[in-house]
Length: 86
Image (cartoon, rainbow, N blue to C red; front, side, top):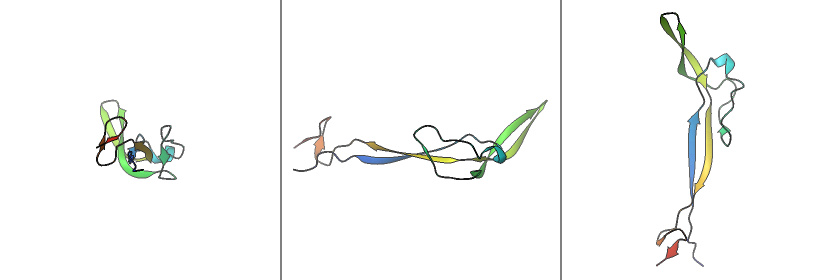
């Protein structure tokens, strides 16, 4: 019996909101995502504070999150919702 369905594993990456690094310890990834950074996260972003007429920019931290999901796909030579072969 030839396999008709060859699901593709997809990795979706996202970053949490940029916040002051000292506040980033407790930041959680959205439901279903796994945090792949630890501690305060990665200091690779900027967040902004508006003070009267000025906007100040500061170095902040983010966490990186991943989610794996399987995208149903037919194997080569099969097609359609039920992966019909030739």
